Image (cartoon, rainbow over all chains, first blue to last red; front, side, top):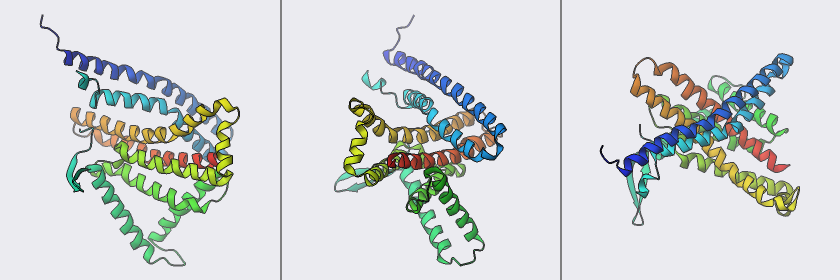
Length: 88
Length: 219
C-alpha cells in the first residue's frame, strides 16, 4: 500500500468539507418553501395585495438566503481558493 | 472555468504594478455603453414622449414608484443613485449572455457597491436624527446591547455583497459544470434561470435592500 501524500489528504478532506458545508442550504430551502406557501395562501385570500405580498416575499427570501449563500461561499473557497493547501 | 478573473494587463503607476483584471475591463465597457446611450437618448427629449423616451420614462417611474412603496414617501433625491445601481447591475448580471465575465462575479465589485450603500445609510441616519441622536440609537433598547448593534450595522454591507456575489458565482459555476458535461442543447434553457431570472431578481433585491436599509436608518 503506497503512503498517502499529505497534500492529497488535505485536498480530499477539503472536497468532503465543501460537500458537507452545503448541508447548510437545507434549512434555507425549507424556510423559503414555508414562506412561499404562506405567500400563496395570502394571495388566495387577498388577490388585490399580490404586488405587496410578492415584494415582501422576495425581500424575506433574500434575507433568509444569506446562510445558504455563506455555505456556498465556504464550499467555493474550499474548492477554488483552498487556504489549507498553502499551510503544507 | 476560472474562479478568479484573468489579469488582462498590468499598469505601472509610481513604480507599483496594478493588475487590471477582466472585471475592470468589462466594467469600463458597461460604463461606456451606459454613458453614451443615456447621452444619446437624453439629448432630444420632447414634451410629448415618443419612441425610446417612453421606455426611459417607464424605467424612471418604476424606480420612483419602488422608492415610494419601500420608503413610504416620495424621495426624489435617491432616484439617481438607485437608478444607476439598477441599470448597472442589470447590464452587469446579464452580460454573461454575450460570453463576457460578469463584473458582479468578483467580490471587489459587489463589496464596493455595498460599501457605497453602507456609507449612504450612515449619512442618512446621521442627517435624519443628528449625529448625536444617531449614535445614541446604538445604545437602545439597553446600553449593553451596543456591541451587538454595532456588529449588526457593520455586517449589513458584507451580507449584501456576498449575496450578490454568491448568486452570480454560483450560477457561473453550475453553468460551467453543465457545459463540461453536456456542451450542447441542455445549457440553453438553464441560461434562462441562472442568467436571466437570477440576474434580474438579484438586481431587484439589491436595490430593494438598499432602500430598506436607508429607510431603516432614518427611523
